[in-house]
Length: 636
Ligand code: ADP
Ligand code: ADP
Ligand code: MG
Image (cartoon, rainbow, N blue to C red; front, side, top):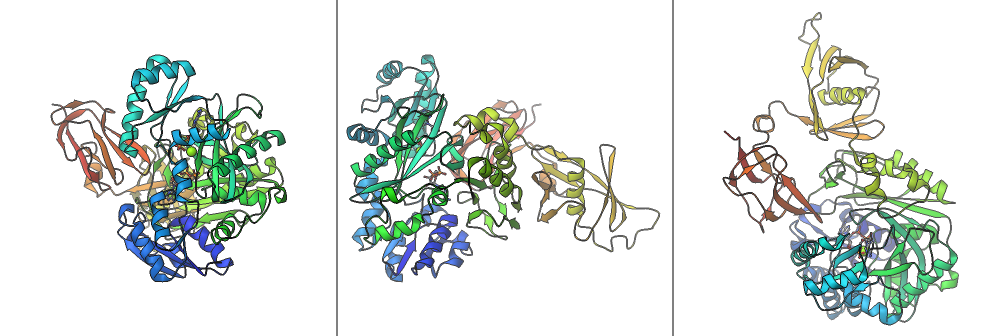
């Protein structure tokens, strides 16, 4: 076994790898960017090496610096985590050329699965069922349209180099094909530098079921399935194992196909073979098709660890150190049911917009597995994935597992940033989910029931207002007793603002008046009847769902006076499109620019009717959060 490894990643996955390494007596070296110098993974590792400034191209993607750090620290191997360099075959070659071990598959296996079209061709050859469609070289639009018609609508256009749902378009009917093809190709070209696409049959009521596989280069086994059908915009939200409605026959067929895929490329280490499954009726052994293979440890691996009792990171280290597969297929058993929910700093009602903030309060239940790279006081910065934690629960059967997930989410408290916690709580209680009736369209169909901003109750607004006011105990000093102190607090939540008026009778007795309704609050010890926390300009109230109000400073002219005259970048990102031109007349809601940030595209609309007086940035520019993009003036 290695005596020291370097972890070329950050956040929860770096912490996850450190935990197992420590149990195995292996020393760890962390790497970090300037934004992460106080991060949890840096504190947990035995040593830490600075890579560079916050942007990933200057830090976590600097393969040569990472290899140099490993050599200087005397590490023998590099664990890539997921994302970043984990599926980069050139990095694997460089690691090996430096005499180090890459904890993962060979560069050749990664290359074989890197492009979706080549991977599909390989799978057809190996006899693995693939989604019917066209994955050939010819990219002529008329030819592709003809292929789409032969496959039969609806079809899915996919970028061959795609990932994260990018460059993917669902086309329902033939007349929409060419337009969708052009936009998929353009997106693929800008995101991956490769405009090639493939066309697939769109599977009805699709379910995403993937098999966890493990190989040692010679042999391979599978560790059962995970159902990842709960997705929003092709990104996983809750994953579980086993898959609802799975039969022994179907599992055997999928396991066989996944192991065949792994063996076809001499796979070593942990990997995932993703299948799309026909969910329009009960699962059938001939109703699943290969989609792609992820040649790394997956975000949702804790679900598999819970139902198999196996530590996948320990297996990764053992196989990378030269051991054979630690278990045979027949040694593995499935026990109970597990679910994982991904807690993110994101604004769900605003279209799952990634959020930032300082997490000033973070509490998790004791009876769930928590994988997290942050603690109270950590900042969710705009530079990386805004994940706060993964919560994994394990129970005897699916029904108890659903209850355990709900209860774990209910006992989770986060303050300081907008999160998807309320959305996760609603999803965990959703009747179709609880019934095991899952497919990739569930979240979109449930729509506003899951995603709409909670309308805060008068009590919640009142509690936020008194918490924001932070009334000192000696508040009445200097005021005459017959004239209670009055103050108005301005709060924003979702797209609304509230202006509750506080009438302070005593330091512990306040009336809050909003729209002619009054609530009387009494302070008990540290709080006013419901837990709430203020940090900087964010007040989080823990009612039925956490509500993170923003405190509006009435003295801040910029936020009140000229609201609507400027369009600012909501987060750092790349301007991919600038539609606005100086002199142009626009109406409220018109698309002015497109910003790409954190794996998503954000369309920036005109805040109101007006005339564009200046355009400060253009397509291709990198902008900082808050940067002026477009300025408007009222139409005369
Ligand atoms: P998975 O396919 O493992 O479930 P996701 O679909 O959530 O992962 O993520 C999509 C991609 O984004 C993955 O390929 C993963 O490598 C990358 N990714 C996700 N979270 C992070 C992170 N915190 N840091 C870096 N990369 C990430
Ligand atoms: P990515 O590389 O972006 O992860 P995938 O090929 O894995 O791309 O597809 C992502 C998601 O898109 C799947 O999890 C599934 O929800 C949906 N999807 C992909 N292919 C199909 C298909 N043929 N029919 C229906 N849905 C599909
Ligand atoms: Mg995928």
